[in-house]
Length: 292
Image (cartoon, rainbow, N blue to C red; front, side, top):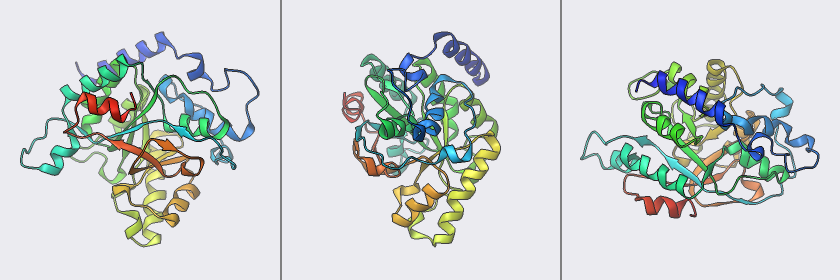
């Protein structure tokens, strides 16, 4: 089925179904909403395939005094493809076949998983907002074209939202998503995050270079998509205290690493841990990594 038809079908399907009350408004369980959490709340609606209101700049600042520790699995994918070079062991490790990926999503859905976004997690950490049962965050690094052509139709079929962390210098180059594909996947509810301009190990380059990679990638995506981009991913999992401070100062709300883990203590909003899913993982492995 052509991707455009998948997009149109997804929009109609998601609009017809509508989200649960807890997904529509993290304050639905009752009580007044703390002012500090309002900026994040705007971005906790991405799974609804609706264009959120663009928050004012001051609203995008994280609240101080984050106090809730959360245990939410964040799964990390790269390619959804059949590895084209069998002898490429690195590529094989990063590649999950479409068949296996579909089976993994089937298994997650059968276990009652509700996919959420990083900003939903941050909002829950900030103010204790409720999350749906069995929350899992699905992330895809680098912005490969197969996210749009292969992963998104499978995700949409399962009513799952995911985050694609995009290397802005690669947009429109072979094997990477085009600008139009980025807009299309966002239109059906996916989230676009920043993954720097040139995929540099930020802790290993000069502070000036690191800051430029962070700030410029955010600006490029915001210009393309027309709204703030608030999710970040460290290339190669390379970060230090100075890099983390740069990401926060740039206006991001959260950032993910390649460090393995499930628990997210209050101080780790910009160093969220993940669980890597690769070519060698079975359905049972994925369920275990998702704590199911």
